[in-house]
Amino acid sequence: MEPVLCVLITVLFSASFYLMLSTHIIRVLLGVALLSNGVNLLIFTAGRLLREVPPIIAEGQMVPTMATANPLPQALILTAIVISFSFFAFLLVLGFRAYQALGTDDVNEMRVAEPEREPEPPMGY
Image 1 (tube, rainbow, N blue to C red):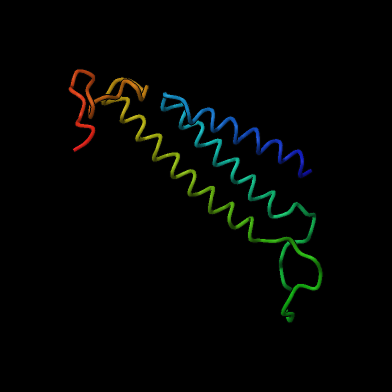
Image 2: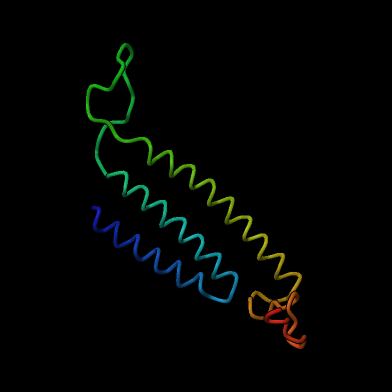
């Protein structure tokens, strides 16, 4: 099962890097979403895929008596899902607001801070 997930992680990372190198903001946002899913899958795979029982300790015992699943990757993934969703929502609103203000989603055409007809800034002092 791990080799299939490793191939899927590689595909997600490759597609996300390809999309994030684009000049259009929507593609960059989709790349960020794919990257977060790839990282979550990487954490899940690194935490070992086992068919173990949940880590619940019976009453009166101090440690589990049998092999249990590792709860740390699940906790990390749940936290990462919340953070990545909020980050994606922030970037989506930021991209939409930039599109409303500038009329384009191409980063090469967003030249409010550096207009094309302005002289070049000094290169050295």
